Length: 402
Image (cartoon, rainbow, N blue to C red):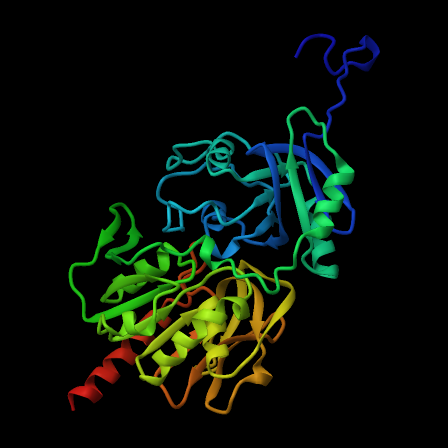
């Protein structure tokens, strides 16, 4: 800084000007400083309360179509690396549309970092803004629901605010949107990578006991890793795979993955397939969107949530054991427990708001949960669910053998 910079008396003060705007559908305009990609990003604004794992969050396909507000003020301070990406489909565009931060990004402070967060955002075409009062924005979302918005970044600070307001107001609701085609796999593939262990890193499955077909609605890598760790030979198929294609692989179990958008919209083509698989009584395990579509397949209903659940510190009770676990969540829709048929038992419930977090079927070997037992980021309290799945498959295999 020179002698005159920052000194109003010497005429050297330069007033900072906004280089990014978050324009909400109701006309509210939040000013800040742009980072990441230059341009405009439309999306639904949510908030995430996790204190770590921003790279995993921003590469979670379940966030397709959304702009994430991070409630933790310091995001980007440990940089990024090549190992913490959660999306499998490298050919797909980033599911998340943008990110909202409080503090400016600092230089990386982690030995694992090999890239600056801002450069990484640019490379993934994610528009960002910092300098925002994220506490106030979070309170607005909490009180009024998740708004649509346009996030705009222009280094010269020139914006057509009236145009942006009109565009934000005209954005469609997340309700009714099928976003799975943006993130699903284009073709079938096999998976054998196991979870990261210090100091070796990721491993490889050396043996398997079960053949599992995972239907990819936007699956996260760590889900597949934990399936492999549990002794599963995993084959991933696109969201449009038919029941005939899946059954032809002779699976011991079916996995229904997480994913973005309105489950009822994706269910237009996915639910008939799930119904056929359930009717064949193949052991089935669903997570997040997979949980919601399993509920739809048995006659239940889903509903749009006001603010959703996005964070790594959510308390959930497993009603089958009475234990409370802290879990990672990311969903804007929920299963209506009152709509579930008698043969669907509620197994998990959110202790934040009482919403449904899991079901099990009494007439078929199938269960699902709303939260993310694989976390990444987040706690590992729910890893037992992958073992519960393998135990279910083992029981069914023993019945067939008998």
